[in-house]
Amino acid sequence: MLSVFPSLLNYGLVAPLLIRVVLGITIAWIGYAKICTHKETEFRALGVVEIIMGILLVVGYITQLMAFLVGVILVVKLSKKVKDRAFLTDGVNYYIILLVLAVSLLFSGPGFLAFDLPL
Image (cartoon, rainbow, N blue to C red; front, side, top):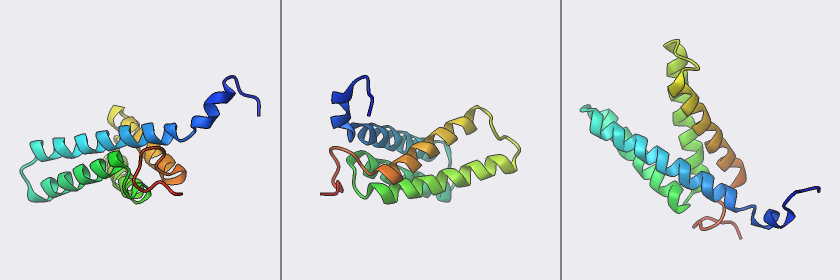
């Protein structure tokens, strides 16, 4: 394979690590914001679930399952935006990028420094 930096290919598991940490922090932040801004119990419960999912992504525990669940949540959010005819606005583009990150983690695995790294 032709590569400009062939020695960097040895560190291919760093990319899923970076994706996992960024996605986990972002999902946990979305959950925290949901807890702070909503008074309804169901929104607060979903916020707690999102925080737990974000923490599990950051530490790399059951990463593929968490990536799948985050993807499901993001598809639901995107479908609500499509239903409200707010598709391809600034907030929706953000959800699409997060969905792509979740799907890439689903296929690539957790990367370095994870509890569920396959041997």
